[in-house]
Image 1: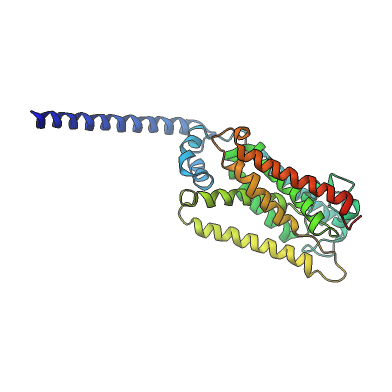
Image 2: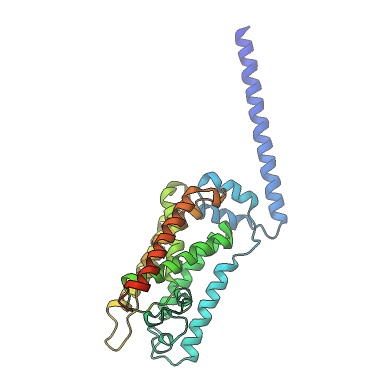
Length: 303
């Protein structure tokens, strides 16, 4: 009797499992059917994006509500603006060469210049000006390849917050650690995106790297090394008649990304304003900003 009772219980358990599996499969088919009908839900693209940008536990949530509305307008708009400014100074303003643009950009109202620090917009607008073809191509490739998927997942407000935090951190850090040098380029914002993304990857390494991900990361590292090398050249090996440009924005932008960016990108399915890590990162960031402002007013050698 006991054996028969146990056998009946096992059969019931197996039947329940089969029923649950069938229900899950039907639900999955319904979702795929709905996604196939919805032109704003390219399922394959979203699946790849989720593998790159999110750890395993929250991918399902993203895929259930993923769509391309709104589209990644922030990164695309910033990239178009930077490219337009570069073309203007490269084509309509006479330059010696396309690799190290000097004359036009150093007279630009956008560039951060130590002598004109009272024009506060320059602490942000310097991101629109680039020192050459290699400089702008490196930044555009990185921010489009990384920024568009990030904005698809986290939307423009969060990505814009991280990007601009890196831009402002870059100019303020340059004004402290390289106070007599000019600054151009969007590297502060780009490195903030990379810093936030790679901190997230580091914490969730096994869950976030898809097949052949190591090779892709090596390609990204190669671009970073190339960009840093160009920045170091512009800073330390520029000809005597040239104008060296600071590279501190790269490092400061990376740190901004590893603090603010990490907390923002790791809160995909959470309310950002309720996360204490976000407020700790913001408080630390604002403390650094206040110190930089104090330094520029009272202590800077550029005074």
